[in-house]
Image (cartoon, rainbow, N blue to C red; front, side):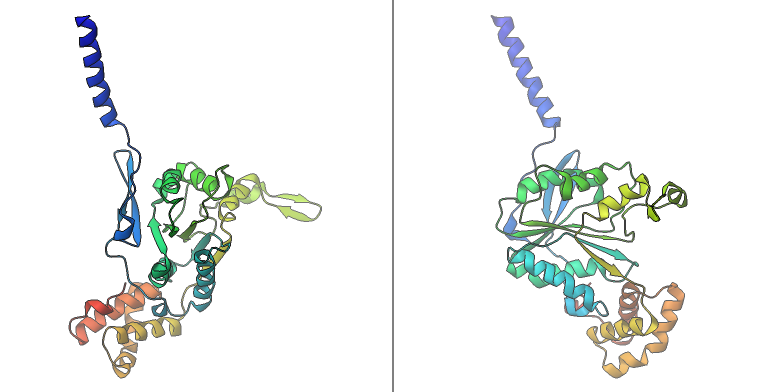
Length: 296
């Protein structure tokens, strides 16, 4: 009897130690502490961490993408009002405002119950856990994946396909997924894949590899495309941010030559490059930039 008690005691101690090593179920955060959250993974355990100081960029600060703004705003308003809405894929040239647009949407509609959860692509396999945490909440959640792209063998690729359109569980009504990517089909494309195409009754049908890649991006109901900026567009953004950072319209206009030289040195024209130039130029010519006007 004594041996049995000793065995049970040691077994219980062993189980306690093993349980400490196993991933625990994700706990809900303090939903009232923030409007944006990150999914963090540490030693196999995932949790939502509140983002106490999210980027406060305004939609009106995003110049030259009015059509994209209008379409994503309409989709988000439908979502917030309980109407049907689509998952959104924002693709195109880097630095053209894709992720800033999603952040601006959060800033614009957080007061109406919109919340954002940023998930790294490597953690997309945990989407079912996140769904369990938010499915009964009254808020409306955007799952945000920035700079999304995959190799075919990555686990997050199949997990995302399943959550978007291939799982028996389905997505909760209070959740949408907004993703940005430089690749329209989210995966690398190779020349030899064109050899798989078939010619049937005068029509060209893509091969299985191409079809597989297209199948993921097609699960996003709304596609928004972003294009490289021309010189006038770039200069208009420079002038906007220079005035936001405290320069007068005359001072901002006088910076045209410096703005063009900056983009030549950087080798590209984009909203990001324009914002970086404006910060540098305003810092040199207008003193310290106030925190209030540093919105990105």
